[in-house]
Amino acid sequence: MKTCLVVEDSRLARKEITHLLDELSMFEKIFQAENAEDAITLLNQEDPDVVFLDIHLPGKNGFDLLESLDELPQVIFTTAYDEYAIKSFEYNAIDYLLKPIKKERLEKAISKLYFSTSSKTHTDSGTSRNQIFIRDGEKCWFAKLDEIYLIESVGNYSRVYFNNDKPLLQRSLNYLENALDQNVFFRANRQQIINLNYIDKLDTWFNGKLKLKLKSGDEIEVSRRKSQEIKHLFSI
Image (tube, rainbow, N blue to C red; front, top):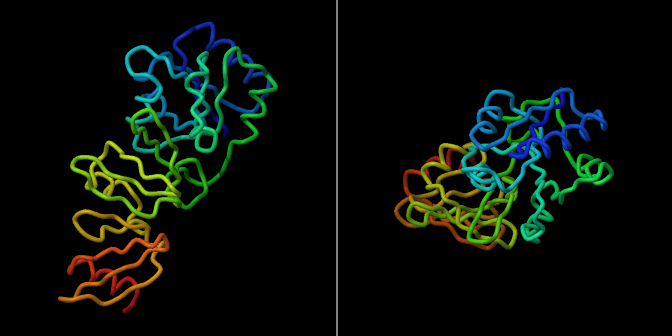
């Protein structure tokens, strides 16, 4: 069953978007929320495939809502303000729709969505739950997990490396270690988490430690205890 959530504080705007979605007949169920708190409740209860999200909301705005989630659905932004059409969203968000939204434009945005019959909680299933939202200053990203190769601790924050970007995420390294798939993301030492799929070379180091070279060129010194785990993992 394909489902969506419309998050919009204006009753009229909610009605207009819902009417357009009904006409397109793409979703069996359309949930509605007028603020971030209600949206979070519905996201947890109903687990929709996509969220049509306004940025200007009472209390928490749309960006705050995304930052409060541990896992992201697919998101299509809907707003009356073109000032938020930051270039970084063109390749990270599913789409960015300016109000008033035209039916043809909405249909084009929906065509970009990915629907799967497999569980959304599996990061290797190809579903929408394979990305994290990051806001660092005025820039925002939807970082795909399979493109993140390194995460480094910066105090209570974490620097996330993917493609040519390295924004700060307002989450601690300990939090991310517990939240991410530990079959893919490995805590190499107190300061760094690596994506195991990006290991290019393994070298023995002193005191029983290992030194890894990632495909990005970064060199990572693995702690002694974690070196034993890596050796066991790769049957060294």
